[in-house]
Amino acid sequence: MEFSDSLRALGTKISNQAEAIGTEEATKNAFVMPFISSILGYDVFDPLEVVPEFTADVGTKRGEKIDYAIMRESEVQILIECKASRSALSLENASQLYRYFGVTNARIAALTNGIVWQFYTDLDAPNRMDSKPFLVFDLSDIDEGLIPEVQKLSKDNFDLESIISTAEELKYVGALKREIAAQFRDPSDEFVRFVATRVYDGVFTQRVREQFSLLVGKAAKQFLTDQVNDRLKVALGAGTQVPISQPSSETSVDSGAVAERDLDRDTEIETTLEELEGYQIVKAIACAEVKPQRVTHRDAKSYFAILLDDNNRKPIARLHFNSARQKYLGLFDEDKNETRHPIASLEEIYLFADEIRGAVRRYI
Image (cartoon, rainbow, N blue to C red):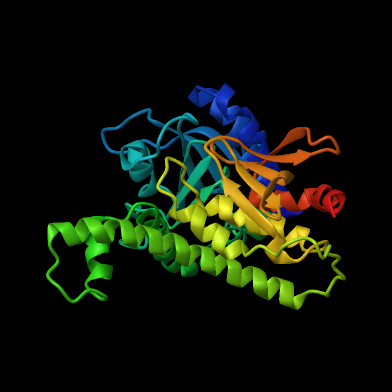
């Protein structure tokens, strides 16, 4: 199995089992050990490779243990501290890692709850673990761009020099991406002022701040939608043109206008970037049968509907992304009965391309 496929398979397992895992020991057995063995490729039952409950007395601290130490050529290379899957990871969780990092040969330390893995090194000061991770990898929401970096930590590809040389860039690029995403979801006052003062020449009063808080949030959503649409246009333009049939009685629908209208609605419904990305994937698949502008969407409180011709009697698919733990792709049979399929990542939508195109063909 390819490295990326192994990661996705573990991500799917985590999504399916996360609700049933409550303790730290259960997290180790269900999530952490499979990551060490099936992803990183180390034998968890070979004490020459993986040492559980690793002990290295530090100063007056005696008998403290780190959960796992990964060994290479009889030297510690990676230290791993585990927390329960429902625990949030914080610097307070990493106190033992700090102490152990400086008294072993390890250059890599990992703090994990089995779902999110935070990897640390010593960029700021030699032999002293940094306070911020250089790599954060979430198995419930896999970032494809980080897969090669995780692979460098595996037994067959372990390359400490390469890891350390790219760690600083990864550390700050990752932190910046997370901060930008947070600002796009919920712009802070500082971000609103920073953007607004570049387009508004008046005095930045409280009323102006409140007005631009809404406008900046709306502009951010529309910007992201435009970026996704541009990527789709490039992808479609690079592909082979497929003959498309369209009954003359049907009216073309401007999906861009529909998307903008949905994003601008002042309701309790929140259209997320992930839903829009999923929509664009379904749309790209459906374009093998119909023109892109005929594939539209409508958001609802409980699901995100993808329709043909903006007609709710012609459902193509539904995205059930409201749960933080498990996402579902809803597909319809000939009688328009919906079946929900669990997916671990947006890329898995492509596995259902035949069903999506079949749904479109039934309407045309």
